[in-house]
Length: 398
Image: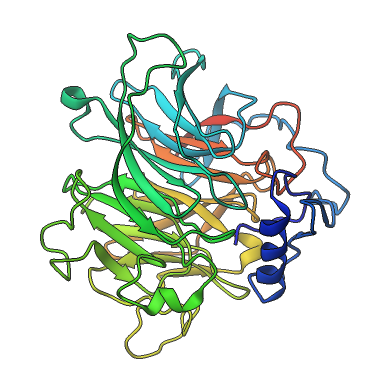
């Protein structure tokens, strides 16, 4: 689950709210999560700052000096007042696309001015709990086909659709009709996964969750609790472990981060239960253990994570690769983690930056110049947002 103690949004229906309460009490995470009550309201402990006092929003800290080796500098706030931002995808030329989980809208953000342009809404999005309009990806052949891909929750499932983007059309009407390329991913009040990204092989990868039904992660015939690999048309990709299946790896709880290093190795971040969140090196056909193993279990048949964190320090969502490291955005942890790599292993201890300065952190993507784009996630119902939330930040990293 995406953890942080605060008031959740009231749009959850009574039926969904009751289901969420059952799932939470059953052990999604006991780390101070709010519990939804019938009627869409809830009780919770207010989010706190580092001093332990109630927090009314993410502050605007004084920007640090130029970064030294192994450090981060926030060089600018690109834009503010975004509503439940989730997916983040760069366009050719540097501008950004960002999705709004709760409204189902996609916006273009100018990398120069921060100006927001509404492209349109994705039809069929059913926002509730942790579901809605989630990950975005831009076709690797965007110059030729202008296709934008979206992962989203409907009334019946999670699915992936693609839409043609035409910036010559009027604002709010720049997306063509969606063409569903992949459907049937289990949905739930919790654990919908949602990250999609094109790999160096030009195949589309998707991280899914087990939707609160733990057994799905170990069921190879289910699309829940998996990393999927497919062609841009939604067919099982060539050289998948099973030629007839899009399943690439399995035994996952809730994957929300995908990134490739300089040697084209795939890394993924994963929410744990109450014990360990994970950063995994993904290999085709391998089993990553959930729910039989969490963290570095050392059990035969399961792949251990490369790094692990207590959920209070992480609850990881997006990841990116830059400057020889994986950078991992933390939701409940409210910090950006740097995991230096040497080959297929981490070296030294992970470093934490921006601790609590901007609240919950959702998506991070690499910029062309080696820096990072980072979104906050304080309007997602898990924290009391500040007046400028949510934001996209530009980072210089070393």
